[in-house]
Image (cartoon, rainbow, N blue to C red; front, side, top):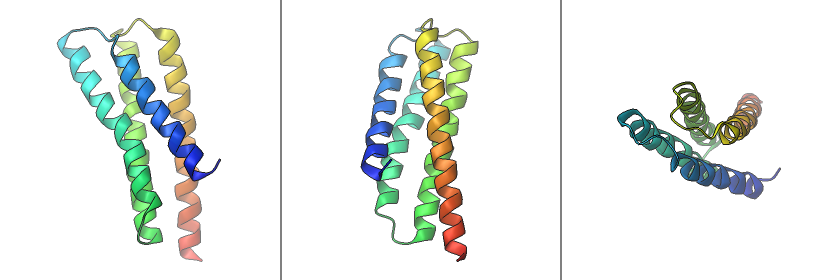
Length: 120
């Protein structure tokens, strides 16, 4: 997968999250976690875009690690929404969690590879 394809995938994931939270429970917890997950999921493509314009390999690694952190935050938010039953679309939650896990794996591998190249 090239960088443009990954960027498109990250944008699609953020949009899927935005659409998903529209059906979250309209309680204090539902509203709070909706806002939180929208912030974390939408920051990933933005930070990835910055990583593509990094000034150095260290800067690239740093921005990729920020994206990874936000992906992990999104994952935890999805799990909380699922366990607290703040959204009854369990089919969509499962798909989002799966995609989130795949994206985490991609970013972990990318950071590891970049760190190895930095040491060469």
